[in-house]
Image (tube, rainbow, N blue to C red; front, side):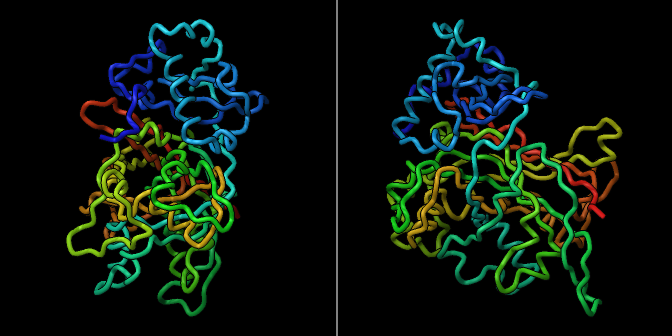
Length: 425
């Protein structure tokens, strides 16, 4: 049993915030994810709080923290974080003497404007989804879909932090150079192969000094928590520009994350063994540890939903396109962070690591339209009769994630929603 499981994970816990006791809430008292918010329409400073049911608790107003800087809170040691979590949990439990004092620090989420949960200094996107890597590789290299390094090294690239937005983000269709198969020269035009990517994001808590390397035994204390992440991608721009240096304009125009960081402490009951398929190479020693083998994985069930402009106009809700799980990732959170620092790179509180697209083994579990439509060759037919190979103007993509395990409360991440607007002239 994971020794990080404690009284805050007790499935019998109930909160005096009634909505937190609903079976289908993403935010029961066993979750307590962190975010930043202010009242809609106000000019207030953004404040730090936790989600509890359909409410949010202002931690400073409740007397639990003294800082307005989430990055400072993220930089705390693991013991301090656990103590804060325990205090919040105790104060929100049914029968807590804190109820009367904390009522004034409670705000309905429906009346809140959410912002990025912290200051994101750097963003690195990994490629840990082996089923995505294999399926996409087959589109371009049918005989050798995975490059020789994939099963040896956690592959990643440095992305753009300034264009990361929180759920609810809308962005214009990106422009870029593209070159069609029958064109002699490239043309600057709006992308016509715009896609989403179903990912998880990992926020770094404690950093490391330049030149220092984190070991597999150390890194668990350096991961703060996780969010859902949509790494929007212009596939036609990507095809023309990505060799030899990798993604650039195809990826840097927008990335959307869910607003609440589900902490590693909340995820403790959902850790799973990390086992490589038989016949695959085992990780090099610096990427291996007994703890990682025993519980390096995290079982997060993931979903992609699409709501088109026609659906919204007709009053129809979104349609689910696929389901997958983070337990299928080829590299763990600990391996991503360890590898990132092995050359002395200094990670900092608030740095964000993307997991790469999380697809399942079956075709219908794909985490992108590139896979679901076989590179645009096989359009998807939606329930209302519309078809999609790639995203159209007005489309909204919603990512959802939750964790379920017998003997524990279900917890979730909340929605990660973004919408495509027409290209600007």
